[in-house]
Amino acid sequence: MKTLIIIRHAKAEQGFGKDIERKLTDRGERNAAKMAGRLKEKGYRIDKIFSSNSERTMQTTRIFADVLGIPGNHIRYFESLYLADVLGITETIEWLKENENIQTLAIIGHNPGVTNFVNDLTHAGIDSLPTCGVAVMEVGMDDWSHFEMAKKQLVETFSPKD
Image (cartoon, rainbow, N blue to C red; front, side, top):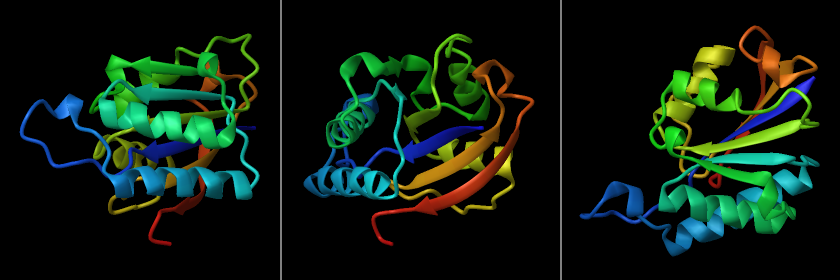
């Protein structure tokens, strides 16, 4: 059994420039630290983070990594996760190597992709994963190379407003 944690980036500033360059608001930074702390309280241990390469997701990733003690070499940023759809997120998971001992993978991305991904894989019926919302899934497999065919179950969701 593996664990997949899907995280929507924290609250970002409204921007008039390039979307990819939008930064987190102060509230977004606080919420990211709060949600990372909640994962820690619940006993989740993330082995690797895959993140979109947008500024707001990279900032969210760094905050989660700091709070959870995840070293930089366990984080990978993907251009393909920027505004990714279900297929894009699934294909990014395939970057995990068979011999990597990754029990828990976190993906930090954007809506609507992260919400659609969780709903498509678990039939959860989530309206919208809010900013800095977290969805935890159990994936019935021993090896990440079997991800597409494995049974997936939503374990829990939580957000800064909970």
